[in-house]
Length: 350
Image 1 (tube, rainbow, N blue to C red):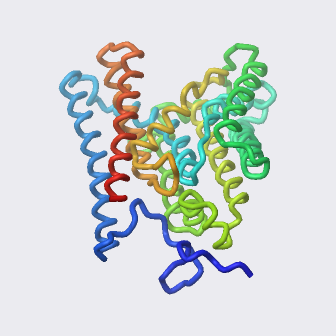
Image 2: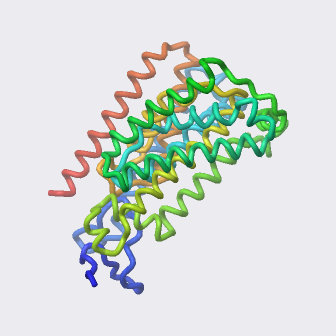
């Protein structure tokens, strides 16, 4: 029997299990866990500081509009859709992969779930179809990458093109209006629970589930292990190919859920839905501290990244700034986040 690699073993009571996911390696001075907690807190606090600064800017530039309850609810609702996608993307990136097809999968799931034939089955038919289509697309990605040996960038790029094309073919370039009242009602203020939109509650449930899976389950530990060193994970007894398949299935599931949420939000299905979601999700994960090389990342950080981007977009819209300026600002933030990551990693290596 192949012995586990030393680097993949756990020194705790349960021998043979992988170490819990962590954001940073233990300190060389022997204070591993305190140093880990300090670095994690600094990163999260930094993101919270940026978010607070943005809220301050929004409150100063548009005090009557930005701080209005309705606008804050809008920010959270818009963040919810891309946030669910980002949770799945975070898992994929932590494992060392990438998924460029999430936006296209959201579009495909949304238009398939809003066809006249599907809407005849009501609320359950729309929700079920959106999730199943997302899972099916994720399955294709997973099989091509895990068992077909394709590079994630190429496989998901192919899915991006194929899903967009199929979504366009289904709609024939037209908007599919939702006529199921029980679906549309979820987007109305009357359905809010204690002032919280149902979509925000769905987002919170996905975030909590994602956090628990990543930090409190064997699946999460295996995800981190595969991203940190796939060969060491294989020698430790992890089925790397199956793990990667599950991760892309998870990404597809999140896209299906996001598609249903977008249907509720927009009241329709369009082939243009989810445009550039892949860029926003990747950017939010990177800003949140997830390494593109894999092996490290947090759900909380990714959520804060989503909120930061959504707040920026809202502030720009309220101040009538053009969308190209928004994209330039987002690009600058992504570059800054990557440079900080590289600087941090070089500091640890020395």
